[in-house]
Image (cartoon, rainbow, N blue to C red; front, side, top):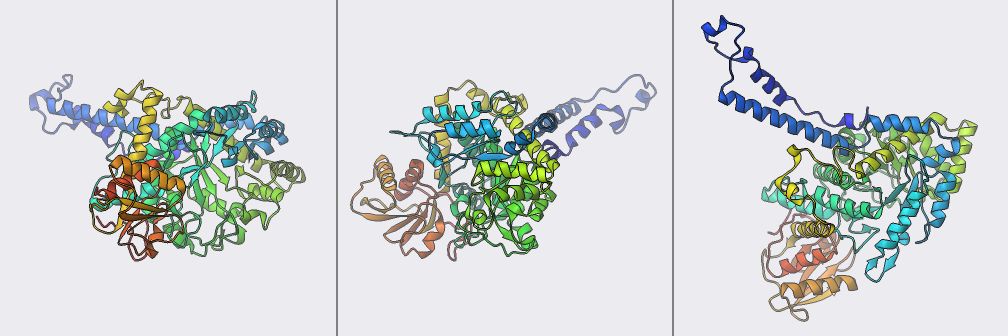
Length: 602
């Protein structure tokens, strides 16, 4: 079944109503004289005509929405069929390379270009060390040129190389300013929790739906303009809070239902902006207490617990259709004891049984959970045999390629399994290329049907790049304003009447708050002591501000406590407004000490 085919089907009530209204046999009491002349059809009343027109309009909109959803959900049958034709012509060397995504060491992409050409690699990932810097932040012109050389390394092949990045917002941001900066993903959860508590409808917002979808759309658009095709985001991990050392504010929150909704908004937003996204990290990294970058975490929960909590976002993603899901490095004894999920047939089988028929990509194969217990080359073969389709960042991409070729030649790895993986990857890349080019029923260049075009969208047509950038900045500001949460203290209290003194944080944090305070008309130096708290710094002062994850406030003794969920300029502007007496509309997306999710002092 194609990803498009797995999209939810909407009831065709409107179509049935329309058919009924147009058939004279559906009329109630007929005129006896009129019934004697069957050749004279009865004329529908004005009310019936209006109802029929309304039903037809509703059906057209439902059809347009379904087509848009299918286009954003991932490759359709046409992409899969073409991918099968292309892969059928691959040599073994090409097959082995097509499922590998490599990395390189610095801002010189030429070694990666050579590897893509030589090994027929599926693509490359861009890490922080690969991003060239300039005086104003990222040298976007140079980065775009480097990405272009990587894409050109694919030569004349129909399936272009994947140009990927980890770009979640907040702590995991590989490409920073002058691109629009975004707070942590948990900010979306705080905004949603605040809306729930206040009784607001999260769907009330811009023409793209939830704020989460808009934010991810703009994030994707910035990356796509530089030449990226893929972002390994968003996180579908449901965090358990303070005992989760790895995900934290990278998660949307601790409520499985809320995380599910926000995850789907996020990955649809990325597709709206032209990128292939990847929901990560199945079977859930938010409820284990060790970091898979360093060691192999063990998930001791039962299958029932996992299906209720950790797997809920992934089950929804599988049912609705998403282009890609990332498999993490986590041991789940209830599935297969002693084996990382990324190398476990049982884990891939479970994910497929949830309904996912798109690409399954491994988390980076150079992480401690893998390299400490498994040979790098063999791990690539084992992951493929277990059910992986795309192998991310093997510790030695050349060795992994050679290992895959040798495994097929020896019979250790079935060529058909490798071909299946290659076909899924090729279909994904063909779909993304068409999506980005505006050739599908959705995406950045698509002409939306009239039924889906709001008045605002029509007015925005033809807007220049500067206007689009301003809209992205406004969305980032709206997110920060909506997320900031008063965890303890008096709501709408003027905390800065005598000025503020800024402690803690980084030099950039303090500088940004100083700028925001000046814009708000606040005096810096003396007065209320505002302590900016990172992941683990001490909490003191008159006002304790958690910059990333809010759980650090559980140990705070300051009378006023605020959760910010980000370190962007817009985040500090939202903080300055609250210090000046504005309301903090967000709610806690996780428990903080004894305070429940959704809590706010306002």
